[in-house]
Length: 144
Length: 144
DNA sequence: GCTAATCCCTATAGCGGCTAGAGCTTCAAG
DNA sequence: CTTGAAGCTCTAGCCGCTATAGGGATTAGC
Image 1 (cartoon, protein in one colour):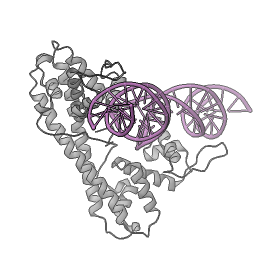
Image 2 (cartoon, chains in turn orange, brown, purple, cyan):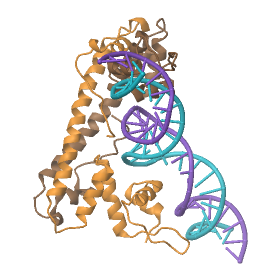
Image 3 (cartoon, chains in turn cyan, green, yellow, blue):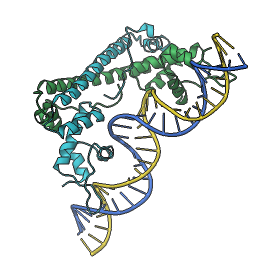
Image 4 (spheres, protein in one colour):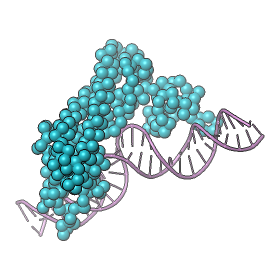
């Protein structure tokens, strides 16, 4: 028996985000008060917390949609949920590796900077000539 | 003396992306052939490679814009470029830390999965109840 | 009971950084 | 001279929100 604002505060999710989740079908359409305002119960709070937590862990909304469907069928096998989590873990590991490569390259770039003028700046120089950098690196895509 | 396709191949950047960079002012408007096609020279290739490399290192386009302006003034101080690179390094470090926290939580979640039915699945359970997870974690924002 | 502040509503547009598609024109090879 | 690749412009879409505009509902205080 809560308004959207209270729900958002309780789950740590901003109000427009909740309406967005409803629009894209992650949350069911909430019942309305006489005045047309959305009303939420404890079940909605749990569902929203689930989404929030999964988002914090970097799951994309589509993966969360799958997980929610799974959790609505408590007697089915756990394997699918496990798979989603494993896929996410592997994505996270990949990102960490790439970011570490970037980190070391940035550190090298900065360390070699002579703090003189731009013309002699390693930062600019390295960026302009890939052959000056230590290794291959590829675009780091996606959110997270 | 190159077309947009060749330029893209040489720099490792897709053709629409080059046009996009021109539109937002990261690349100058290219001169055109009689038929209206863009023509690029070596300077353009260097500039595009610079952008590409910086993007690979995770610099946002606005930071790259700053770096390009700096590199156009080779007699000014290196400090500003250094600062941009340091800011990027610190952003990368932050992301690594967060991702590592996510990694360990995901690993814990998966390890505790009994591989039974959804009703007993730790993956779903942990996601539904933040208090079951090991630590605080916050949304990991932005690209990279 | 009234007012004012705070919430809530819808709808639309924008963010970054591209990517995809439609429907044309130009160019280079055979 | 024909064909097919590569170029052109323009628009719309991706993700996951966020912000704004211009209203209506609710609630706390007097």
